[in-house]
Length: 135
Image (cartoon, rainbow, N blue to C red; front, side, top):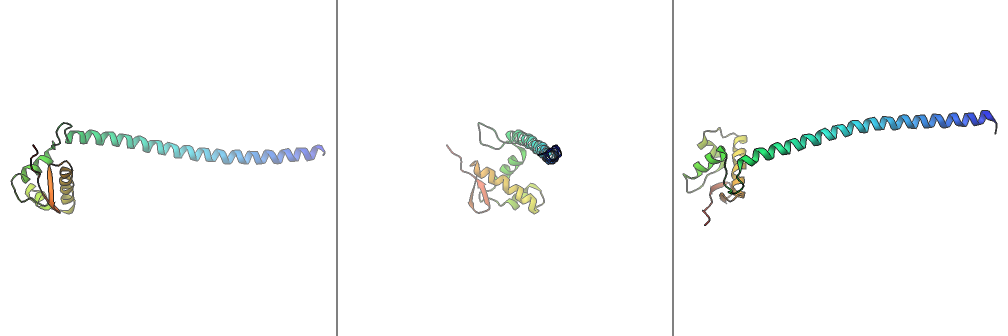
């Protein structure tokens, strides 16, 4: 093998290595940007979880499963006046809230939470009533 052939082989190998290095550098840049985006999203999710836990901690007391916030207390006050139970739409009307689908669904979600905490019962689907007092 003569010197020009060896130099050509080295130049070829150098060009291939340079192309590979450039390709890997581009991949690193792309992956670094993606990693930064995912890390920001993770930080946002941690902040959101912390905020939601803080907000919901004020809604429910730890020792007593009764609902502490004003909207829940208003619902309980309305249900305390009826022995037959009420639907979410009727509760909205009694609260003076427009019975639009979003308000009715919001009320229904609160009612379902209170059923899960055994404050209300839903003997008939969609009809909520105060749960009997446990002794």
